[in-house]
Image (cartoon, rainbow, N blue to C red):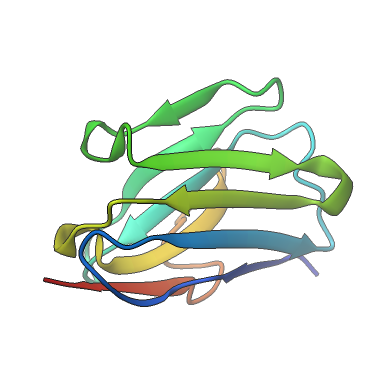
Length: 117
């Protein structure tokens, strides 16, 4: 069975940094465009960043210049380096290929990020 496992979340003060990691079992990220999504509340799900198999990246405007996505195919791991964190970045973060359904609801609890002012 496919499992997506996110880690690295936590509680930090505004201006701090966190590095999220995403690994998988039963599935290889290589060849997929993988996205980091966040869900600040139950009915919200926003694509924050993505990285394609050829390394092309996307960032939503609100995190440009602060977040950096990367991947290590040898370790089957996708990372999200988050710097200069703001309270509005607080959310559960999920790592899911962008073509998969229900990225914030179906694949697991994600990793929680809490940023205090």
